[in-house]
Structure formats: structure tokens, C-alpha cells
Image (tube, rainbow, N blue to C red; front, side):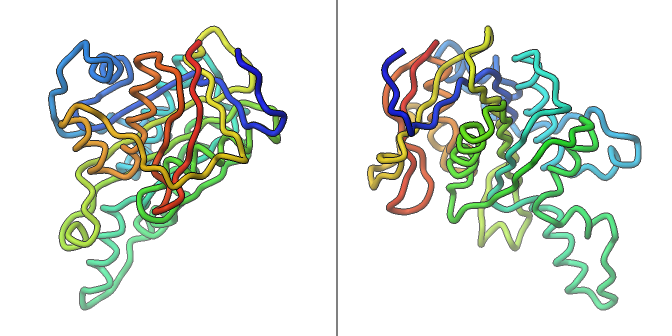
Length: 275
């Protein structure tokens, strides 16, 4: 391992989970991102939410299902329990279909709001369902960044929390699509969820070490893109799919500098070193 500046933020990626269009899990996605398999576009499938009681399971939204599926896969990969695990949730828009349903109700004549719709409307709904499903009482942060930078902002928050606490942190970044007419104003192609289990120590399941130097964390350099046209189109079509450039580096075990979109003129730069 190369020398690391004292103030650098550093973490090992111990677990990865992914659920998105044509990418039903991390092993499938890793093969596609390496170029071992061709990308086959398909609508995202939303599996039943695991760990929830029956009532909450029926109320679970697309965003909740994405978080539970991708988060569960990352934990399984690392053989890590969830009860004491810090979490960081990042999303561009929260649960888009639920927002659409609330707008429809408010535009109707009776304007009655479903209590279930209401409690699923808050931006931290997925965090709450995660706590119910896993029994976790650990700290949880929920954030949203401007434009399409929520994944990068969530990753930076997770690295800061890991650096200050010295404990594992699970990053869960999810987005869902809006129905029309909101879709015309904020086009998001489909649901997409990614989870990264970050650890301050190198575990047996570690894929790579990520490092962010605070003195050089933000850059005006353009974000890295993907060479495959179909994957690049997917990366650009969903805010949290901006993670695909990082995931491709992890799948290919490639070292070097990577720039992720955060906000115009202020992207996030990090260094990767495969294990």
C-alpha cells in the first residue's frame, strides 16, 4: 500500500450490492462491466423486501426494495451483520412514484392523503424501513445533493463518518423513476440501487482501497465516463447510476484516479488501489 497523507480519508470496499436495469446483482454486473458478458437492457426487477413484518412489507415502496436488496447483497458478500452498522442513504429524489401519487391526490377534488403515502413521502423513509428490517439502532444519515451528485456526496459522507468513527459504514444510494408529467421535468429511466460496505480495515472480502485527499478532493475536471455506449447511456440516465464508473474500476481491479460527478464545476476525485 502506498503512503497515505495523515488527513486522507481511506476505506476498503468490503461488500458490493447492485440492482438496476439489466443488472440484477453484483456478480452479473461485474461480468458486464469487465466485458466478460454483453449488457442486456431490461427493466429493473424489484424483489420482495426481506426482513420486514407483513404490514411493512405490503407498504414498502420501490426505493425501499432497492435499498434492502442492494444493502443485503453487500452485507452477504462481506459476511457482515447489520444490527450495529452505521448507514448513509443517498437519493436524488426519494420515492418518485409516491411523490406522484401525493401530487395526484392534492390535485383532486377531495385532496385526501393516504397515511401510508404520507409516511413514505419523507426522504428518510428507506432508512426507517432499513432499521425495521435489520433491527439496527446505529446512526443513519440521509442526504440529497444538487443535480445528479447524490452518489458522490453520499460516498464522501460515508468516508467522513468512517474516518471519524473508526467503524464500518454502509452506503446505500437509490433512485426511482417518476411517472408523467413529472418525468418530463425530471427524466429518470428506471430504478437503480447500489450499496458499498466500507471498512477502516482490510477484510478477506475487500475489493479495493478508496482514498480521498481533502486537499485535492474537489476538482473541475470532467467526470469519468464508460467506453461502452449502452452502459454510458445507463450511467447518464439515472442519477445514482453515476456510480457505474467506480463499479467498473472495482470489477476490473483497476488502480488510479477517478472523478465522480457531484455538482457542476465541483466533482469528487478519489484514488483506487485494488487489493
